[in-house]
Image 1 (cartoon, one colour):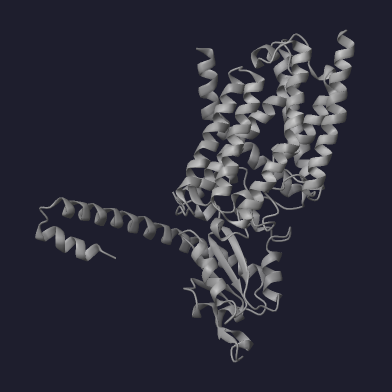
Image 2 (tube, one colour):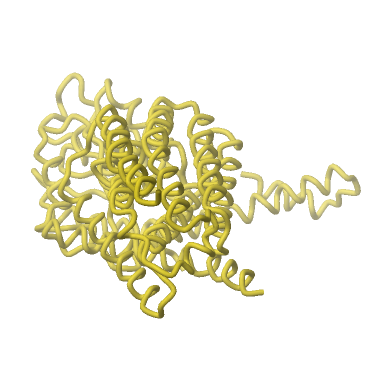
Length: 288
Length: 175
């Protein structure tokens, strides 16, 4: 019963909260650039407008793929917030992303194909680190279950500082923030036109945006897992940490130029291999 | 409720402008004018755009390009000619390669003359374009409704038993 309530609350309120976060993001970004910035509700206006536009599709398969991308992301979030298995969450997220990539490929345009290629490259870049996060959680708590992780009797961050730093590194990729926003960017609108979303318009584009809100929210859930523990202060610290990390991402977004894909791939693997792997090794040694 | 007025996305095309008007269009996005506070985004992708801003006159080389961009934009859409060259050809009107203003190729909805058009004037033009977008949206909805009715009538006709009244309705609404 309780799981059912959490899942329906996630489905209903995640896009509202995610959209609001995106609006605050745009406002803070504008202020960092010395501009006044759009209203906080601007992302909602954008999406509602997109639903009013004519739907132009190169082929109908692409809209089908995007629908499954959205369903996949929502499913992943539901798994996560209902306290499911962390490994399952990671696989479900990968599957959802594959639908987005297939959608971009099916449009058969050079721009969206390059976007899809880059998205594949980015997935290769962040996947090792995401798995190390799951492994790290398992080594400290002895469980992949998110319901168990939330109820751990200690904060997980002191045990996993390297893995947390590595996760922050790839979070920039997942949140599509500069310098790693290679496949689809919110800012550099002219670069390979709009990457993976080039051939999507109207309501389909709106669905991608909504999926992005859902995704951002449960990525913050990962951050929450690092900080929370069973005391009443645990969730408070967790949510505050999420906000701080989100602000940090905005700051990173505005202070770096876009990197080349070679750099993204090599550096994120280097971070996973040093910070992440060293953390795992040290945990192993300490536990013996 | 029309949300176009809250989130007009722009695509900017440089016909054969001297770059004067282009710089002024881009100046609208800078901190001084910051059109993003009205929700305006410069998309660079016709499939995401609502308003097509064209600077410079139209010539034999770019008329197909402009037509292509226009056709790729989903309805409702508005075309704005920015600067006197895009309006009428300006001082280049008599050149052998220049066709004239944008309205030689596309149905232009509004003109922002000037050499170069000032950012304030361009913002004013975009705000006017919002009203036109709202009207076009209304027409689009009405057209879609009519189309639905026509297809329904056609289906009824295929089933047989088509009356004279329906036939006359069909001929009136067929676009």
